Length: 118
Length: 110
Image (cartoon, rainbow over all chains, first blue to last red; front, side, top):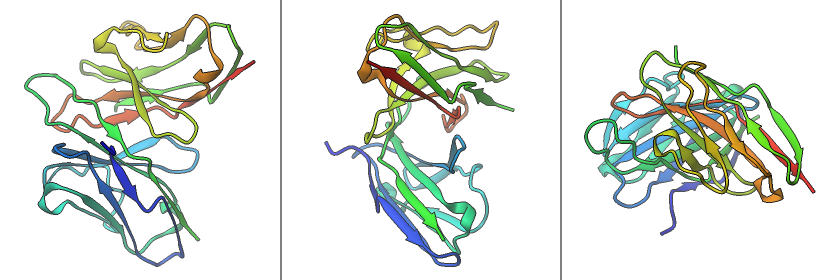
């Protein structure tokens, strides 16, 4: 099992350009999360998919960010147009469907994509 | 608002010394707390969760609701414990998203 994979590992782009990050969750994991860590700050939640549906996108910073999960498998996060403050590490995580009640399913993280906007 | 605070950015100890990484949280509901660890060149991984009340790699953490704390402890630090440690709070809503603290870098010196 390869675990959660993310592509690319690094991306350097200029302000105003478009970048698309990809996340492949662990096979069978319905839940997919995007987080990011901006330099010097904590890891922050961006959004959550359950299969192909957006369950919670309260952490998306603005409408320059667009996330999709077509078919409920891999997910993409597009930033268009990129700004300097978008630089950081973008993490993807996946987990199994939760059982009833308060049971927590462990989130497995990918290695992250380091985005640098110049 | 929900918040997780890790007051120390860096904690440096000698091998064999006790370690305590501090974590405080703010949450009006019933908290579910975790410690995640990121070793050098590795991905973020779950270390332990309060609900399991287990010891992993010699680490323990006790939830203190009165002090709203979830400090991570180990009686004798090892060099391989050197890593970035994140305390996280899971919101018991439909998303179970994680709220992370800013992280503490633990450096265990020989």
